[in-house]
Image (tube, rainbow, N blue to C red; front, side, top):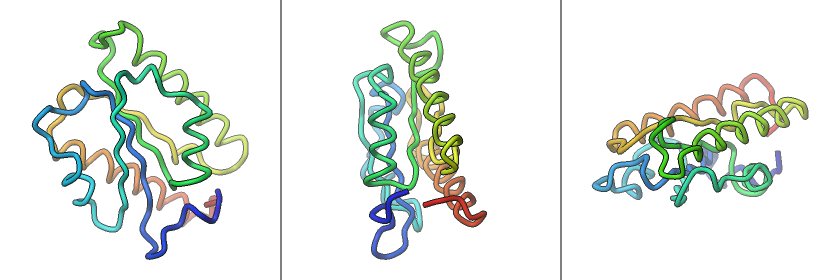
Length: 142
């Protein structure tokens, strides 16, 4: 990807887009974001995961992040009924585009959760960062 994605100190940069209902209300997202060693995390809450757009995901990967994790509410629990289904389809499409251009589809991930506790949020961020680091170790474009 773009050379600007590499932070000055070599940290992997991950943007986490999450549905407002996927993470527990008592979770301090800022503290969670700081607790993943070697990873700079930028969390962004969405009113609904159905709002995620392929063009936005690709722009994030091009301009500011090495990877993106999208956390959506579980199927059947979305307040907009099919919001998480829409998000899954869009993520799959974007992953296909990333694969087609040889950047690595694992730069973009999606997971489901409802009221996730802090440790589970951190686990998901760490898993996406690890997937991105594995791509880079295997010579995928950055």
